[in-house]
Image (cartoon, rainbow, N blue to C red; front, side, top):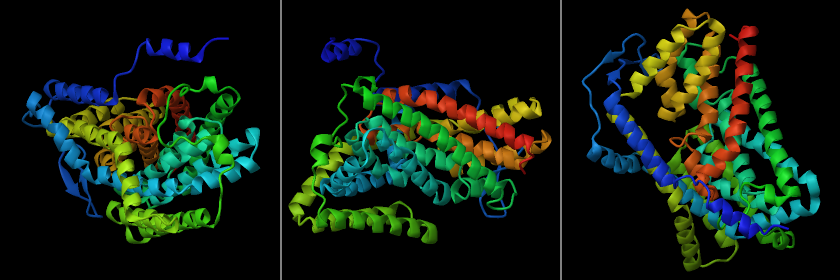
Length: 471
C-alpha cells in the first residue's frame, strides 16, 4: 500500500501555482503593460431618468493616453487598498464576530445533531438545501459580501460530515454566485439593468426563476457527486493532505459535542441577527457600516451568553483578525488591478472593441456572444451595478439592431456578472478562498470544470429565451 506522505511529497515537487499575492501582482503588471499597448478612450456619460450616470452609446472617442509607469503601478497597490477599505474592514469585523459565535461551540452542537440524524449518503442533502437558501437571499435582496463570514461555518460543517473544505466553500460561493446569475428581483443588478434598458422593473421574473433553479440543480449534482466521492475515499479530495486552518472540525469529537441551553441561545441570537440583516438591507438599504454593527452585536451577545470576560473576547477577536489578514490583503491587491485600468483609461476601450465585434454577428450567435462579453467584462468591472451602467447602455440598443429582445440582453448581463464573480481574481474568488483557507489553484482546479458546465447551461437557456421570444 502506498504511503500518503510520499504521495503528497511527490505532488509538492511538481509544478506549483504562484502565491496568490504573486498572481495578483502579475495581473497588475500585465494591465500596466496594457495601458501602453491599448489606446485610451472614453464614452460620454449622462444621467438617465433615475438619475444614474450611464454611458451614452455612439460617443466613444480617443483621449490623450495616460499609460501607467512602474512607479504608478506600485502606487496602485496602495490606492487599491484604500479604495477597497470598506470591503476589507467589513470582512475583518464580520469574520471576527462570526469567529466568536463559532468559538462558542454552538455549531459543533448543531453539526453533532445533524451527524446523528443523517447517516451515510443522506448527509449530502444539506448541499442543495443551503445552496438554494443562500441563492434565494442573493437573488432577492442582493446578498453577496454578506455571506463571507459564513464561509468558515460551512467549511467546518462540510469537513465534519466527511467532505472537505471545497464543498463548504462551494455551498456559499455557488449559492451567492448563482443567486446573482438567476436573480429575479435583485435591485443592484437586474433591477438596475432593466431600468437602463427601459424595461418594466422586475419584468420577466418567471423565466429568470426557472433559470436560477436549473443552474442550482446542475451545480448541486456536481457538488454532491464530488462530496460522495471523497466521503467514500478521502484520498480523492483535492484537499487531501492539506490543512485548511482553524475552521477544521473533528467529526469524532463533534458527534459527541454537547448542545445545551447556552449553545441553543447562541444559534437563536444568530437567527435573529440574520433576520435583522435581511430586514435592514431590504427596508432601510443597510450596507457595510450597519451590517458590521449587527455582526458585532451577534458576536458579543453570544460571548456574553457563554459567560466570557472582556479579555477572553478580545483575545479571540485578535486571533480572528490574524486568521483573516491574508484574505483581506488580497482584496486590496485585486482592487489595485482596477485602479490601473481606470487610471490608464482603457476599460471603455475594451468595452467599445467588444461591442464592435458583436455588431457583425448573426442574431443567434450575437446573443451567446453577449454572455461571453459580459463574463469577460466582469474581470474588468467586478461590480454588478458598475457593469450595468457601463455595458447596458451599449448592449440594449445593440440588441435592437440585431433583433434580440432587450430582456435577453439583460439576461446575458446577469449570467455573465453573477457566476464569474467566484472565478475572476479581480472579483470575489480570492476573498472567499482566503476566508476558507483554500489556495486559489485548488479552487480553480475544482471549479473551472463546473464553471464550463454552467456556462454551457446558460448558453442553452439564452437559446431557449430567444426561441420563446423572451421579452
